Image 1 (cartoon, one colour):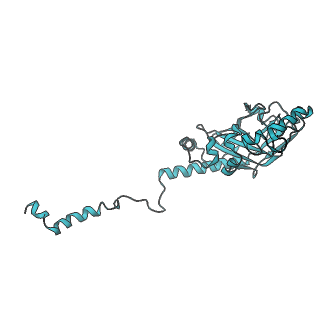
Image 2 (cartoon, rainbow, N blue to C red):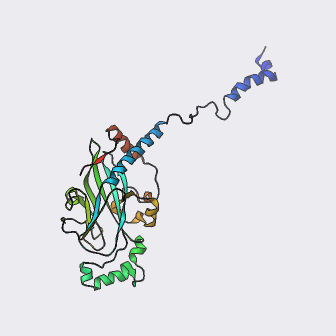
Image 3 (cartoon, one colour):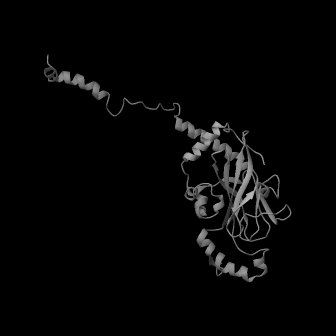
Length: 281
């Protein structure tokens, strides 16, 4: 029987076509993940990275950090020190801290107030236009006053974090590096950043334990991850730059893990650091 005669019979054609259709309809022959089955490599990696991040955040939030000043100035320091953290490629952890003040005004135990006219001029323009409306500071940066600093912690093979150095603003808004000795000059047990200016920048250096007019220390419960709504409300994408450890826009939302972050987490796993670290000053 010829092939042409065979294909001319409807029953034969159907018998040949059905297996082909069954194997190609809607991709049903392709493998499907089993619900609740083992996670794939990317899911496992994300879970491990999240566990490492949670462990590091836990110890960051227990590490006491102090904020102070050598001069009295206006503005109440907030009850919470917010932070963002980012892992490095060699096991270090960079933590950006945000300190909130109720206002930024020149009045206080400083030379602007002693001479009166400079403080009044600043208050009339920079802080409060004609003492009533919002001044340049509010229009340019947003409500309140937010000062930022970041501390780089080293992680050793035992999983301990030790403060290496910090970065903060000087009174002229230029960044200054604070060495470990600067951070521990006021209190050898707790890193302390402080201001020497009425405008609250936290890059002060050279002070001793008796030089601060106030100091507030934050610890467990008062050091918290920075919520995106707070970052947006206070426009932290354009202020407190020394605290920035992620791109400015990322402060306003929850960015997906970057490849660099995943690689850093994987490197920490390889180094045996995937366990709860402790603090060692």
